[in-house]
Structures are given as C-alpha cells and as structure tokens.
Length: 465
Image (cartoon, rainbow, N blue to C red; front, side, top):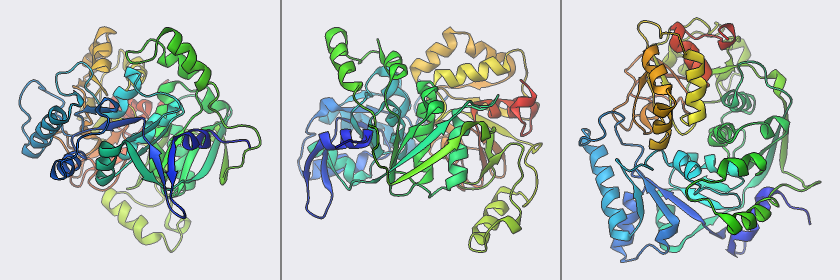
C-alpha cells in the first residue's frame, strides 16, 4: 500500500499501539531548554529514575537568556534560576548542555538544524510548540508538555494519538518582495488560526520545493499557528546540500547510506490525505497581521476588515482585538507609525534572514524614533554575521545587533516591548502581551520588518526595491 511521508516515519517508530488508544512512539532526538524541563527533572528525582538515553538529549538555554552582556550574571531572578536549574539538571543526568558562553548555544530550533543534529526520517520532540520547525527536513517533529518531557527522559518514548493528515500544495512563482514568511502568513489568514487543528501538515508543490532550507523551516515553524500538530517537507537535494559537512552530520560511507534511505522519504503517488489545499503562489503579497492571533493577517496593500465583513459570531473577539491594538475596522494598515522592529526568533533568525535584511538596508539609515533589535538565532549565526560584515551594515544603519536568544519573541526575558508601543516582529505569535504587557505586535517577514525600520511606518517593501 502506498504511504505518505508521515506514515512512513510514523510506522517505523511505533513501539506498540494500545487498542482503541494512542501509540507508543520511539523518539530519536529530544531537545530541552530551561523553561519546560525543571519540573520534568524534579519528577525523575522524586521517583529516583535516571535519564534512559542521555546521548539522545540535547539541551540549550534560550528563552530566559539576556541578549546583551551575556558574560554577566542574569539580572532577572526567575530567568537566572531557570538557567541555573538547567545547568544543574544536565550535570546531574549527564546531558550535553549548550549554555551561555558555549559556541553552539542558541535557540533550540536553530541549533539542531545548523549542527546537523536534525535529520530526515527522525522523530523529534521538545517541550516547545515550535518544534515543528524541524519537520522541514522530512522529520516528524512536534512539541510536548512537561509531563511528556519527563516521559521521554525516562523512556525515550512518548504516547501519541495518530493525527489526521493534510497536504498544502503551493505552486507557481512568488511575486517580488514575497518570501517564505509571507507564504505561511497567507496560508494561516486563509484557513484561520484553528484551520489545521488535529492535522499534521505536509507542505508540497513547486513553490515549496524551490525554497531554501531556511525558508522551509520558517513555514514549518508556524504550522502550530494554524492549530496543526506539526508540519513537514519531503527531503530532497536542497536538504542534503544544506546538511552536508555540518558538525554532527554523518560522514563518508555513513553519509551515502543515509542519503539512500532519506531519498525514500516522500509521499507516494495516489496516497489519500484527510484534507488537501491548493494555493497559487502568484496570489500572495507581502503580508502583515493586524490583530491578536496569527490568522488575523492581510496583504500589505489590503485593509483591516470592516464589521460588515466579519460574522456575528466573530465580532466580539474581533472588536476586542482591534481595541487592544488601537486600530479601526475598514482602515488601511500602510502608513501606520511603528515604534520597534524585532528581527529574530526561531522563525526568522538564521543567517539567510540576516543576509536578506542586510542586503536591503545596506547604505540606508533607520528612521528616527524607531528602535531596531536584530537577534541572531545562535552563536554560530552571530559569528557568521560579524565575519561577513553584516554586523557592520546593521551598525551603520542604526540597528542593534544583539546576542543569541529568544529575545522579544516572548516576554520571558529582559527584551520586552513597552506597553502601548507597536512592534513589527518577525516572530510567530501576536497574542495579547506576548512581547510584554500591553505591547502591540504585528507579524511580518524580515523584508517587511526592515522596510518599516527604514521608513518608520508600515511600508510595502516593493516600493523600496
């Protein structure tokens, strides 16, 4: 029987299926960080249980770390305590930790791919919803809760119910100024922030196949923002080229053997998905969100929906969202003044993202009154940016290149957006208070964010390139 990409990987990792219930799935790689692991380790200690396979666990500090003066003690007490707890737990249980000061430290979903730890055909979990990022390599990758983190640490397995399967096909050529972030924001705007609930999504089509690995990671990263359990892309020559020669990637004969297996990981002809969506890439424009969930997105040339365009059922939450954002129904979004620009997060902090922004802003200056933070996703990205002269370009433009971490993606560290201020952000969530109490977040691509930094207003980047 022909199988989908998901089914091939899932079936090869089922240890046992409980009649009428979930399956026990073997986990190839378990990533952990300081936020969702302390309670899990406490549970192991309470039951006097060791970590079953510590060599398959990779730890890093990312959510709570400061992005300036990382050589100094962390100022925020809760952040400091969580990072210190991660250090102790990794030492106690024999787990490799890429903590502050380590050359491999960075956002958990950035370091896995760039180090060659993330590979096709794997099952990958982390106590973090954006684990779906790793699915760009043709892996089943998804976030788990803290009790499940403890389960995986103890058994290297996790209980999971098999999800329904959705395929989203994107075909055609992208318009000028449109990048991977615009694709996923467009998809979410069309199917809503809950439109893929209960599904695992495979992204396919000529547009997806033409994307770089960084672009594919951006798209898979935000699968969770439409309710999906995860997202994935079949591995191909672009995948293999990206992986070859990375630190933990197989070498020589092992590499050849892995390529032979990885090349079998695709959805076969005539397989059936529970749902299938087709999208024409030419219809996608640079996108931006206006509300307080990622599904509230519009083309940069569009307008915020009027009340007449919203169903009666959705009106209360729609009006509440616009009140929080300080926006009016039916109005254009272009020209809106911005206060902060944040370029970073596990969605858009890789070297390709920084190169894209640097290429656009070279020779330009940021607008007066706009604070611009560029936060690389890892120490390796930071090092590349400096060596390639990207850091100097940002400095000349008035951008602040900071040190690696999750930063202003979420209000769990010192990088918070002040109350009432507007931030154009390349991150993945625009919930109320996500970037700080009463901060107002608009999600966009690195190019659209850079355009706002230069003009001081929400701008169609196509007017500047």
